[in-house]
Amino acid sequence: MDSQPVVYIVSDSIGETAELVARAAASQFDSGKVEVRRIPFVTHAEEIPGIVDQAAEERAVIVFTLVMPESRAILQQEASRKGVRAVDILGPVLEALEASLGRPPRFEPGLMRKVDEEYFRRVEAIEFAVKYDDGKDPRGLAMADLVVLGVSRTGKTPLCMYLAHKKIKAANVPLVPEVPLPQEIFSVPRGRLVGLIVQPEYLIQIRRERLKALGLPPDAEYSRPERVYKELAYAQEVMHKLGCVAIDVTNKAVEETAGKVLEVYYRGSRYHPE
Image (cartoon, rainbow, N blue to C red; front, top):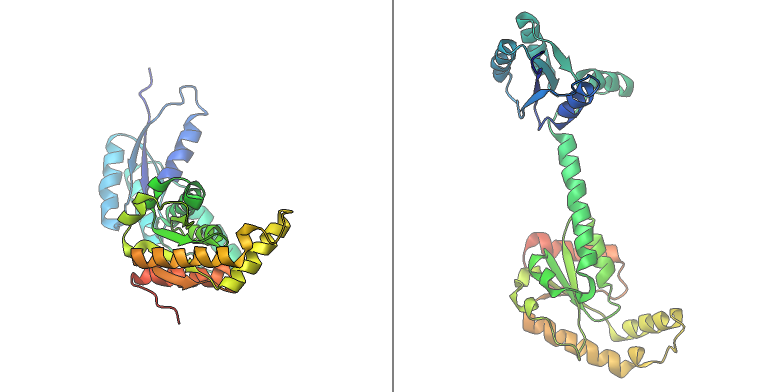
């Protein structure tokens, strides 16, 4: 019976790409089984001779993805000297793209993994914003990077979605005088709280337009001036009590509001609007 073949996966990142290729190739044989030994984060050329020596002792095949040309050259030289079969997965593609694009690659190991991590962090933040939108589940407040407070139609949800695309987990809590605040809000650090305020006349108009869009009378309780003033006064009281930043969103696009929120988030101190 043939012994189980051994494949060394050598990479200056985590080696997932080379391992997938090696296993895909192995699946084309009867047994389809190989012993894979992943050797990740090989970022110093002096490590390579020892790896090749060990592979030679086990009569292993080396499958490698090394970004740096010097490392690739040393591995190929050492493999040739020791009679070890070595397959360069990344090098030929890098060279072809360089010739096609007319510029050299960045030669930074692990870039694809970094891009993937950024993508998944963004998706996670978007899912968080949806799950903890409009105070659906107050348990999310403790896990949020930012908590946005405001009365209805101040743009809390679009703001949280915009922040999610910046990989910031944002939850929002509607401020309604008749609805008690969730107790979890009092445990959120001040630096992670942002309140949205708005001029009453602007909010009245926005709410009337919203009622029209829903086929409801524009003069309903929701948009009456006395109701709007009551809600805004309550919101100011809550924000003062919590000691949170207050940002005026009157006539501001979500991108402009988000810019001021991000200033607060990254600076970690209170923003005082002009």
